[in-house]
Amino acid sequence: MAIVAAERVGEALVPALTLAAAGHLTIDPAAANWLIAAAGSHAGEAEGGLPELTIREGDILRSIAAGHSVRQTARSLGIAEKTVENTQARLFRKLGARNRAGALATAHALGLLELLDP
Image (cartoon, rainbow, N blue to C red):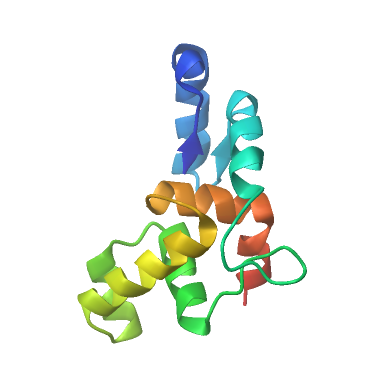
């Protein structure tokens, strides 16, 4: 996944996409401040400041990080696509995100992805 500030697309997009294609999460420094601010306030946060995720929400977040679609996630977890969509919606609310990219960026900024690694 690559996150590049709109004003830097020309100069930063190709290097970011190259790294993303190799499986790295790339966050352009110009976008980092926005991500940090977005991660600052979340509903459903635990005492330590991190959102409390269920096991299933963690599974969904891992799948998003792996680049899997809703259908792929449902098949790999042996659940219905609607269950993935509902769980994903709860995950988005907890992370204050509107979409999969936002959820992944916030999770990365909070260090959740490292905590979820098996």
